[in-house]
Length: 221
Image 1 (tube, one colour):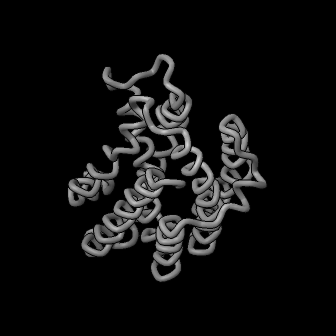
Image 2 (cartoon, rainbow, N blue to C red; image 1 turned 120 degrees about the horizontal axis):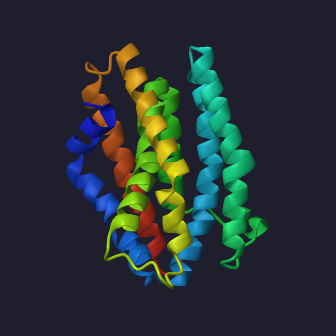
């Protein structure tokens, strides 16, 4: 069984809380208040900065040239591509890059991003990739599920572009590649013996993802 499937099964309650959160349901129905979504976008911009740092750390933690190249490609994709897409998308919601960069980090953003970086610093590349998995794989699961669910409002939904982004084939491939990379790392780094620790990392990162949604629902973000 792939590592991601074992992790999701071991953390089923936390995974369900995360992927079916009220914030996600608001995206699906199109009823999420715009102020909540704008607050989420600003914090997500800050999150991406730390996400890029995590890929830099992944390069440092790599022991093969292939892993270094993969980390460098991920870092470049975030800094040169994904952040620019985020800025362009956010502009449509009345947010410019300077405003997002000046937004104070919410406690939920700090807790989540620093946890991921700490796991990478204290552990190895496998620990870091597992800590990142709830974000990378979770958004793929959410996007795919919402896009396929007949109950999801697509026509006239202000959040359809967000749903389409994470349901798209290119993002689904990115998540699948991350899962395969975790399997390869687990095979070479004693994944079975480390299962309890990896599960705890995955569980905590998933809880922090849930808290990130909850942050978006708070008055004023």
